[in-house]
Length: 623
Image (cartoon, rainbow, N blue to C red; front, top):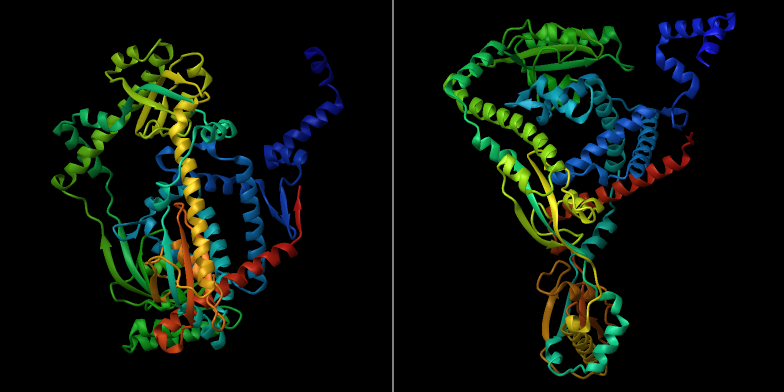
């Protein structure tokens, strides 16, 4: 076969094909050949806009990282349903594409300067209160993002939020709606209620053997023991290794010298600016003339912050007097940065032209980072060296634990080799035990696996967290089995007595309610509350909920309701009267807060409806 390939490859057609492949590789790379075979590669199109496989995979990775972070130390990637995750990301990207298109149709946009300001003011990217590029890059790497990708995500999110804010903030509440809500919110109800506890009837009910046997026969499937396993385990933890590490003063001094050699003083400048934008409503010449006018007023002694609030088109910084916070190099656009880093403190630049318009830049302050002394750095360096050595040892010992425990017949050998103690857990079911180890999903999965239950092997190394790993072994297995009547007799007797007592209490409550409807007082110790509000904490929740669902009494008739309580008891409610809230029962500040809250809720509802309508109107193609 290989000889046939060699013979056929000498033909003119074969050489032409090879030549085509070489040219394609040279001009476009290997992806071009993949593209020839697979087409555009966009699994979804929304109104003609591609949602690429790369976008979907990136969205899945971000969502996966968020889910694992929410799981905490017990995070287990195998618990994530990849199919559902992918579908959820696709649905979100479809909605996002529709909303961004809608925002564009309405002329909404996000400026680069505005994105810069958001990034600079994000606390997660700051160290000691100022933007730190290394921190910024580290955070993005942890999230699986590039700087360009993050800016695009931020731009899209901000654009969508602009439209959402526009819709939500346009909602309003009429005076009539507010008055009605005031009346309902401050409504009070006058109630009498009688509590009939189940305990009073429990002593009067009895259960015979025939009832117990009949109930056991009917519910026999319920009465089974849960499958359980008891395990032994050995644990290797980073904290224990850290405490064993000794670091010499010489090592600390060497680390400090290395820190000094790598240290570079970082300069950050606190800047403020006034942006005179060049846009559809203002051409370049008009913007430049206005910038020069503002500069002249600054030179004449007018306050920079006041003029920023009056003239700056950067709405985000204008309200703060143009303040942009601390700015390091390689953050702002080159023209802005070049001007800023040539200014003296309190000096204002001449108008600086960028893609966004003309900037008047003021240098507020200059800050330099300084190297700490040996005494200041020693404790931190000592912890860092100890931690670093412990992590190195931890990795090696985890590998050694995996090797030894794999071939060992029990946990005794790996425990002796690594100097660890064999620990024991009492039997637990598939829902897990009470301890950190016994409740961990990976431990539960391993403990009930065939490899441990049937084969009697040690488990593989199980990482409970980045700082702790265990190897487990099943000590005893207790299979699920049907329980005998003698084992559950007391439980059945208690259940049957509870049922009988609850039925008697409810029967009594029904009789009391009927008597009250006939105009009788009803025997028992009644409690009266004249002004019960919706947020009342003195009534049991079941009674409060039932009370505000009862109809208003009409004429001389009373409104009566019987309520079965969760503990088996019962209650009789008598609603004597209802008083709606009045304008006087709510001061103006509370009324305004309520009005704003209701308007926001209505705006959110309007926005959700708009999203649904736009999604339904969109043309979505799934390939």
